[in-house]
Image (cartoon, rainbow, N blue to C red; front, side):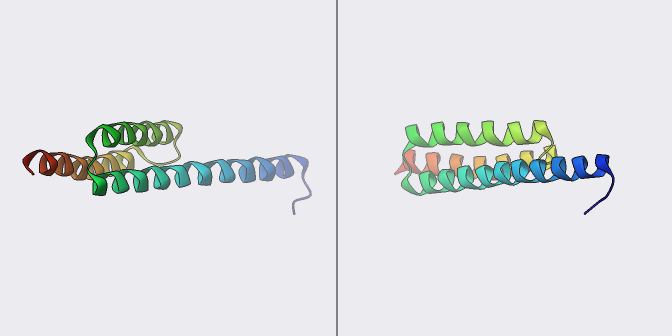
Length: 93
């Protein structure tokens, strides 16, 4: 542990931010799993709402700098492909 007062304060801030960031990343993973589960059930109304919540979650994290903007775009794009494929297959079936 540091002896300098400012460094002690900085360590507390770093720990607090680490916990917040890990919670945000966890919520991204959780919402992505919910989208994938909805894709499997192929319920369009539920799928649209869950995907919208996922996009909101990931955009917020990217805006706050928790994840990079490119990472957020990649994750959204990959899940959007799966959502669109599920919707298309449910309409043809």
